[in-house]
Structure formats: structure tokens, C-alpha cells
Length: 245
Image (tube, rainbow, N blue to C red):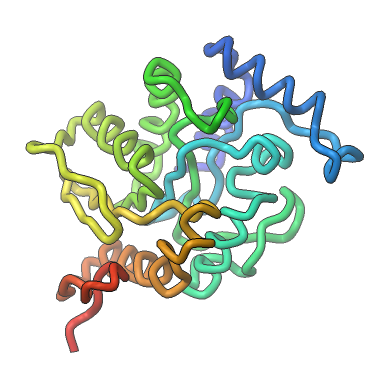
């Protein structure tokens, strides 16, 4: 994707006001704030994807966090889920640093692009089906524009379903519909959809998702993007897939 093409998609996303409920919520959160960020100016607008225009891997989340991406203007930036995610991307060679706290923090991504199915923070972190569908064309444009893209890592079942819908719209349907799971894989035309538990505190604090589990997913995404195969299902600890010896 050229810088100009990426800028056009970003501009269309940032100016979007299609979903009245989401517009009202994101702007209310930006006005009211929370005590720990009371001195900060919130972004309060839709949050575009970001990363390497030549990426072969896309990381896809649900939506910006109310006091994360909705505050900072960059998805998975300034919240606990992002702390877990970027630490893993750094360990696996996709990010130059293990944290993402603001848009000017020096973060640089290599071979990965990060986006979300919905671009506005939704109440209770739950977009409606109509809100999801209204946002999907942006994801479709990003996937189409990332000409080197080969792997989509879906963080959670909502992102998995959104990726399936976007890829179907681009001419790559999946029949039968593959089920989401950590380490699950589905081939859709030239793409591989790879499942990963979402790095929410509900998953990371309980040990449902551990750093080694997420690292294995991103290592697997790199192998898939480079055309390397030869992996077996992991053992019953749910840690994804492991390479054959």
C-alpha cells in the first residue's frame, strides 16, 4: 500500500459519523474522561489502522478501548491489552519497542499492520451487528490495499468473524465456516486466518492467554507469511501450534 493510499483510507475513517450511537458514546467518553486521564485531551474520533504499508501480517482486534485508542488516537495504545500485545510483537521481531503509549512514542512496526473491526469505541465494548457491518468496508479496503498481506491474526472471536466477513466480501468465502480457537487456522484464497485469544485482562489475568501462547501465534504468523509450513497441533495446554523437530 502506498503512503497516499493509506492516508486516503485514514482520512475516510477519521471523518466517519455513520453510527449515531457510537459517535455519541466516543464523544461523551472524550468529554467526561476518567480521573487518571483528566488532564489529557482525548482523540474521541474513529481510530484508523496503522503499521507497515508492506505488511504481510495483519493483527485485527475488536474496537478501540474507551480510554485507550479513543484517548490516544491509535488502536491498542495506552491500555492493558496493548501492553500485552506490543510486548509480544517486540519479542517476536515485529515491533522496535515493547510498549505503545502515545502516537509520538517512537513505535515502529515491521511487516505488521494493526487494525480493528470497529473503529469507534463501543459502549460495553459491544458493537451491534449493524455497526460492525457499517465499519467492515474500511477493513476490506485495508486488506485490499496491503498487497503483500498473507496472514490475518484475529484477536478473539469477534475479530475472527469480522475477518471472515471482510475476506468473503473480497471474494474469498470459507465453506464451511471455520470455528474460532486459539491457534486455529483457516485458508481463504491467498490468505490464512489465524486465531488468538484476545489480550484482554479477563484472559491475561486468569492465564487463559500467556506470553508464550501469544508469542507462538506471532511466530506462526511469520512462518505462514513466509510460506513455511511443518507445524503440529500443540499439546493440551492450549498454547497454539509448535514446530516439528
